Length: 172
Image (cartoon, rainbow, N blue to C red; front, side, top):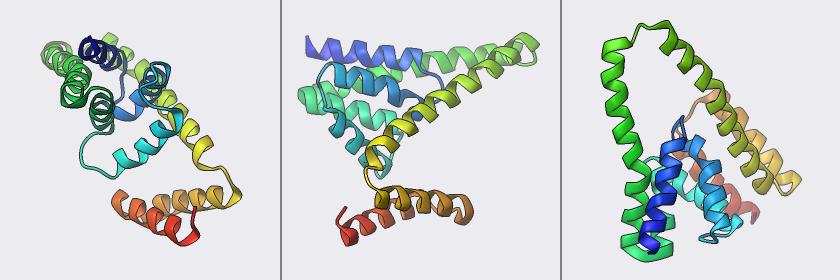
């Protein structure tokens, strides 16, 4: 029963979220915390772990939640549930774009989806910032990393490793 529940919950997330993994974070959070599969803090801690491991963040999160809830079967159920809609939809969209790609109606539809996706990503970022910036030191470190990311344009792994080092040195 838990396998079916994991599959269906992540199928809903995969089916109703546009914009990739970061846009899925609010829905994953809502589902996972409401079902008590992870605590709020565990969820936000895992976002950092997902950022530092290979693969798309939403797939990593689905796999982790599924595994922590029901072992390997749960990991498979959650991951397949999350990915199945994307695979089906992208095949259908590819066929439609080949046929109607220049349609102004289709272009208008996609133009309306972009701001909604941006809002979902910003919402996830604000929620993470509220938990991560619990002190002035953390806020300043976060702003320093934001500036470095903007102006230096280093690889994300470098920033994650530097953040880990700063956390160890400053005992955050």
